[in-house]
Image 1: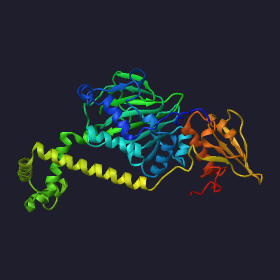
Image 2 (image 1 turned 90 degrees about the vertical axis):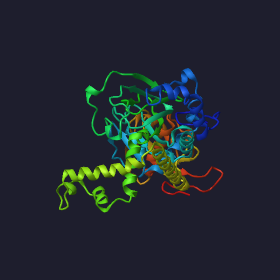
Image 3 (image 1 turned 45 degrees about the horizontal axis):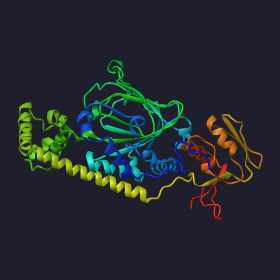
Image 4 (image 1 turned 180 degrees about the vertical axis):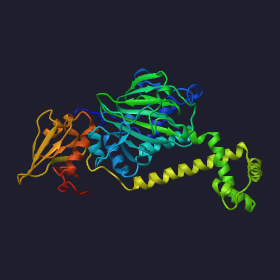
Length: 430
């Protein structure tokens, strides 16, 4: 058995559940002091080296095989690959990661039970609704430039490390349309002095309130962190009152002329054949608002908000049940065996950026590889070997390399143990 690598479980690890991870966060971080001093006020870096690892137990719950299965489930749906805000045009996520692109899985809680249970546990205890986003970044890379979010986020570092820089909040608690850095770079005059500048490691937790400028990048090692997202701009009173007004406009039995006003475009009202004078429009708008405000109360807004949260959580549960029920599983895992296809000979120098695979008919295939992949590729033989034993310091990179070789048709994967006779070639699943 090889030594433990990044993304691989150690033999001594007792696997945590999503509920365990949620409990650790609630016990060690989400107390009265956090909500009084930090929530929607200022960032917090919970450093496990100083305070212990119990606040973030996700490194004992999520491993490279789990991530590969989530990627397989999310492909074509919630999976994106970014490098410096540019999307990958490569044919597979495995190729993209090896080329330096970060993997981002939106709504990852729909694709993995640990993340689903973690989000549900936090939603039930504190936040109404929570969803998870996976950020897997290769060494020496940055997924997105400095930006702000319209959501409060709690980041749990799982493996590797990432350097973070946090700045000021140009807009306090922004709405969605006030986010910065998404479509274009943040103007230099809005980026103030650094408020926090540090590196996070496994078991660390980082809380960033919505509106704070931030950016992150890896150095010499990869990084996996999970962003737990609380969509707080949608939760605020301003947005909820607008939603309450929209519901009122749909459901209120207005006079025909008022309903026609609410459904018509501005251009129709001002320039169309049934145009109104500004005085008529003012009178009708005031009448609509009067009927709305007569039904408006804190209780009515809160009841409508709770109904929306119930609907959002039910949809989350339905999507998780559908996607997890499909039984998605990556073809290559650490507990399967691989070998070179019959007759294939691999030529690869140590530290090389190219591998040559010679076929029995004399044809050769040249493949560009990363330097870190050369040792693994050189170790492949015609004899089946456990994936977990192949040399690679990054457990997820190991899976990526093997998936790329599988796509190229130069390795064979065994879906059963050595005591069983059934096996598969590079394109079959059982």
